[in-house]
Length: 440
Image (cartoon, rainbow, N blue to C red; front, side, top):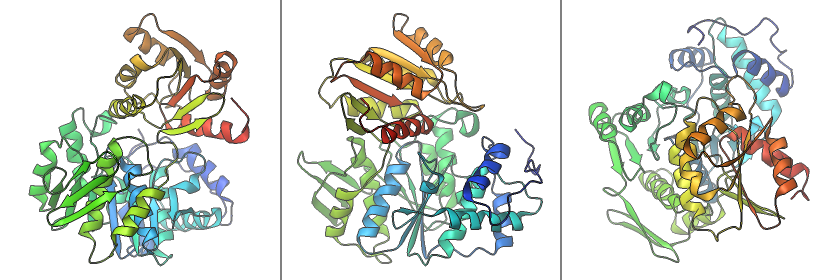
C-alpha cells in the first residue's frame, strides 16, 4: 500500500479540457486499485474547493449487501414524488458515469471531466485515491445542480470512507456480512462498528439488518445517534400478493412488491420506507408515490434475468452472504435441466465462502480470469472449488468472453447460465449481450 500522503500521480496530468477517458486512464494507471482509508485528504481538498453541502437533505447508505438496492429504491420514490435527486454509487457496470446520477440519469462526460480538473487544480500535493477523486467530483457536481436530496453510497466500510466527510441527515445501514475483512475486521461485530461510523449525534440511523450485531447499537449509544431497528422500531409482513409496512402509528398496506427480484428486497424496502418516514416533514411523500417508486425501481446486475436460447441470471454477488441471498432467490425459480456458472472474482474476496452456497445449484463450472493486479486467476478459483467438490466439472478461461463462448458452444436450449462474482464479470457479460443481441 502506498504511504499516506505519497503522490504517484505523474506530471503528465490531463489538460483541463481533456475528455473523460483521458482522466480515467490517468487515474486508473496511477491509483485505480489503490485503497487508503481515511478522511483527512478529502476533508482538506473539499475545504480548498469550498464545497457547500451537496443538497439540503443527505442520506448516506452503508452495508455489506443491499446498498445499491436501497439507493435505487430511495431515488425511485423521491423522484416519483417530484424531488430532484442526486445519487452516488460504486462501482459501475459499463460506464463510469453510472456512479453519478441526477434524477436517474448518468451525468455526462463533460461535467465529470470539469470536476476532475477542478479537483486536480485544488489538491496540490495531497494524494487522492481513485475513489476519493470520484467522490469529490460527485459532491462538486451535486452542489451545482440545485438538488433537493442526495443519496451517497459508501464504497468501503463507512467510518473512514470518503463519502463520510458529509454529515448525513439520516444514515441507512443495510445487511452486514463478511467482506473486505483485511480492512474492516474478520467478524460481523467488527465490520458493524466500521459501518456505524456514518451515524451522527442526534440523527436517526435506520438499520435494516434483521440480525443486527450488538456493536452497531453500542456505537449508536456512544455517539448519541438515534437507531431505528428493523423488527423493533419498524417492521413488515409479506401478505402473499402484496406487503404491509409499519412503524409506530404509521401503517402502509397493500404495497406492491419492489420491482427487484428476491425476498430479501422486502427487508431493503422496509429500511427505505423508514428513511422516507423519518424525513416526511422535509420531503413529504404520499402512499401513491411510494407504491409507484416500488413498482418502477430499476437496478441492473441484481438477479438480472435474460431469457434467450439460454436462461441467464446475472448478479454482482461477490461475498458469502450475497451468495446465500442469491441462491435463496434462485431456489424460487423453476428448476433448470442444467445450470452452468460463469464466475470471475477479485483475489481479495473469500472464494471458498462464496462458492460453497452455489454447490447444490451448479453442474458445470466456468471460471474466468479477471485482469489487473486484484483479479483472481481462473485456476485459483478452480483449485478452491476442487477442495469443496473434488468431482466437480470445471473449466478455466482467460476472460469472460472466452468462458461465455465455451458455454454457448456446449449448452443446450433452455439450460441456465449464472453469471456471478464481481461487477467486472457482470459488466463484461452485459457488454457482450448488448453487442450481440442474438447471442445465445
